[in-house]
Image (tube, rainbow, N blue to C red; front, side, top):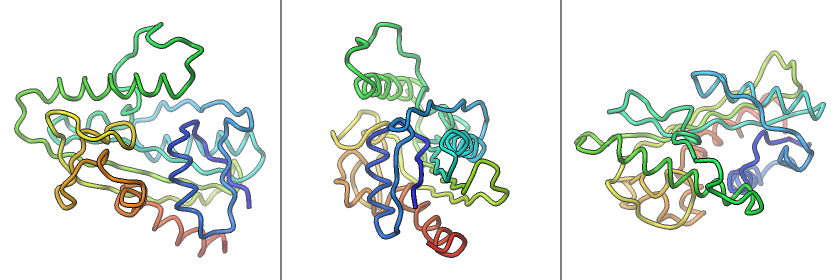
Length: 212
């Protein structure tokens, strides 16, 4: 079965392909099909994930899979939340257009992390958690979307550590593992992450409801 992933994030695609490896599913990024990114105007992860899944399903005429994720910081009343990927603005021209999407994403990630550290300057409570909401629809009007949510608690450090992963991984310290997410290899991260926790639920739903 082909599932179109409603994302242009190459690293997220790689992670999800590994996690879906046990099913007879071909995960294809929407960008490979010329599908644009959906608008994400909502205040919650689940609403945005559903909007992205329906957008991709409409464009491809089939099943779609969406992920909406981010970091929620207790002391900031849940910020950055659903705007995690674009928490800080990146000035026009900060990245040469020819450098490509991944280069822009790296600049955006750095700006996001810098802003989060500024917002938490002098704050003692560093508790936070990654959230991942996964949604799968068989078609754009599917009345029974599959929904799974994973949460991964940790603490925001005062300076980044590690050069693996992406996004807020260098700032998120996981006490039970004694390292930041950016200090974890792909196997360790894919075993413990918010996305992995949500995927355990989603795999069960795909097998039970879609009979994959």
